Length: 383
Image (cartoon, rainbow, N blue to C red; front, side, top):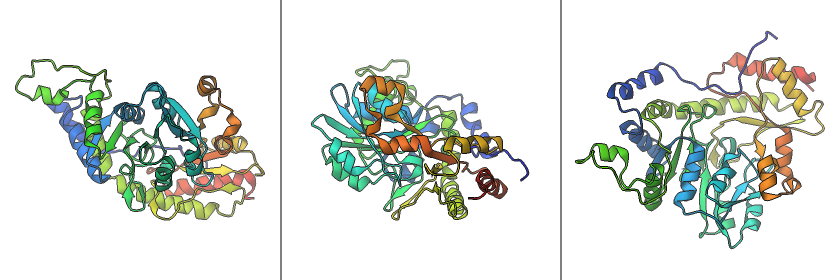
């Protein structure tokens, strides 16, 4: 093989994104303003929800959603054990307690039966994660927790995904998306909170802007921009900039093409790697559209090479890999804070130790994909 370097992810941007920055730069309005509003409206239309609020990240969107729901001390929020740590952190930011449940080995998503068992009188919300772009089983999770408990989708990886014909984002009380560069579309850093609940959207709008009674753009274009707004709430500064939104609008126009391309190459990977019986490949259950933010495999315990050794050899060959994500209860902070028993989450623990994401992004070429597969085969003699 001729040596190549294939990164785990690389944002797909170009001249259109560069040109889009002209408007806010020339207007002089760089913080949250008219371009953010257009991005919010376009994103809401694409995901079939009436309200969207751009934020600084998916983490702040999650915090904002939970805060707007009134989650606070004494409340419990159910979260999956296998996820990026921000899912649990957002609960702690509110002063509430995250309650972890294990995940399904085939989908990497929250186990509905374990979710039902975790509900207590203190449960106020559940945060199912659409991990790696595959929607969680929202019907089963809704049944598990009942109608009185808020369902906040952590859709960080799921822009463009759908569940039984319905776009991610409109499957619960609210949903939160990420535009980090490892996601399908990016604004550098950035996030989006979406909801069908007008009251929730209104409260989140106020909290996003320091708790101000009037949004900045409205005040500055109103009849008395020289008067400061009142502050009845303790809020946050979670506003996206018009610079980010300008890039986001261009990226959003490419979303479906990006997801289609990722799906094509995910299928190609699955066909090419199917003969490696020791490598568990990701599944795409019927009734939905996987957004393929990442292609995550699982290296079996009896594989001819251990997961970490395989990742090290691939690194030497120029193929970047990463573990899927964390078993959050096993991280130092949550071990100390909650005194959890990590063996209570065997699937999450196994996935943390044995999952392996391989490169999948919209700047890869056919030669890149062939090189990744050849490199995996070469490390184990194609066994």
